[in-house]
Image (cartoon, rainbow over all chains, first blue to last red; front, side, top):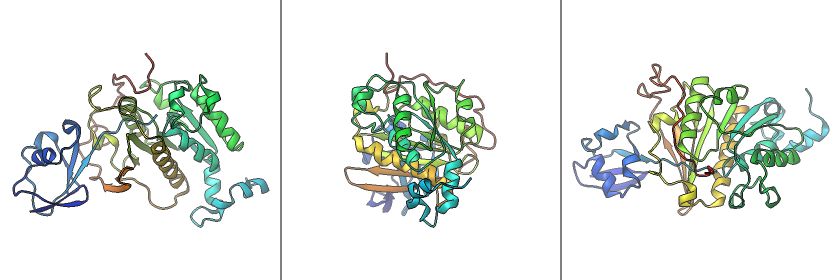
Length: 68
Length: 269
């Protein structure tokens, strides 16, 4: 199925979970990433249970602490 | 108050813009912006806000200028090494534009002082380099109803959002709690390309100017991310301000400011 990850179309396996996508995308500091699916935040405790569907739009939001 | 001929000349490229005009320039002159952190983000933001004629600019920073700052903190010069950053920044801003009143605060923001610091200002810029400060600024601005620009930079990446308390999602809507110390790298550990502060800090100044003048649409409800290596900007729509946020929901569970413990990137031992 096709989903959109960080604005780009991706072909992924059916029934892929958010947790599996995080691993597949080699997300940096995966334990601290914030994930939204279709403009809704996903609780980090639900990453393993949240199954993605065709057309879902996934965004990864990262901590960025620098500034000085 | 009417502008002098010199001011009309100084601000002529603003005044000619239909989104700003004399009216917008007067709003800038009457406005007060507080910049927390006179570093990579705060330095370019302060330069542009001073040049733009923001009437009062407050600058908060407890550090002194260090040689390693000069690769990106363009408001300070080699001669300023060892000076308080707030003094060095104030001097440059006054040189750029004598119209501007600069207030300096040589201190760290804490739960005890931040509400007093932000009170007299219309818009706040977060140019800090550590998560405890970023969460503190978010929570204080939400509690006091102060609009602010949040930003972060690291390596070749940067991001920012604008928070209008009570309307758009806040920093804590995105990130519930600060990461544990050293879990996420700082600029000192990971490095940052100097021009990134220029890109993102200038965008923060842009948001302050747009907020004050009412020009265009703010980055409220969006996170703008920039990757300099691929030269990609992305404007990511954030979920709406939800009922779940511990600080900005209608029934917050955080009602007191928290001083999280964590050494900042630039904190001296």
